[in-house]
Image (cartoon, rainbow, N blue to C red):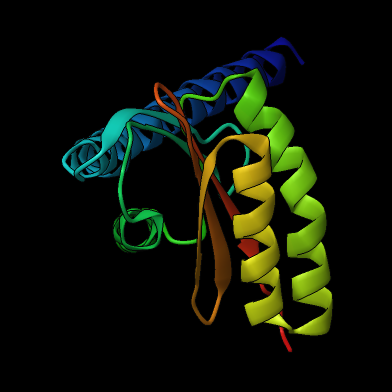
Amino acid sequence: MRFQVRRIAAAAAALILTLGALFGLQRWIFQTQTSAPLKMQLERVAGVRSVTLDFANSPGVVHVALRRVSDIETTYGRLAGRIEALAPGAALDIAGTSDARLAAAAQDLSFSIAQGLATGQFVAMRQNILAQGRRAGVVARVYIDQQNVYLALYDKAHADYFVYPRGAK
């Protein structure tokens, strides 16, 4: 009886050590083959201030803080392309350097964007956003492609960026 208990304990210890080694190896491979290269690739994109990777849950989220960029659509496309190549399925979250005025303007403009997305009247949406931005004292830029509506808000010292998925129409 004692002999079987020792064998079971030894087998359990070997299993635990093997699983620990495999999970450690998996983490090391992920770090060296995905995480570090992804972060380096994203930091090379013009306008990127910092990159934070959050792969605690699958498929993960990549947080990118941007400096002032002139074309958010192109910058977002470059970032998304690099993420898809190295970490397929990971979500991209972008942010700028916001302040209270830009945050308030973004809140107000979100209604025009929601209406434009719901109705498909993007020309009217753009006109409303530009007019609302002028009234709020910020420069608003709107870009659109097949997947998203991009909103960039600027004032003298700050810039913030928002991406709204268009969804299937």
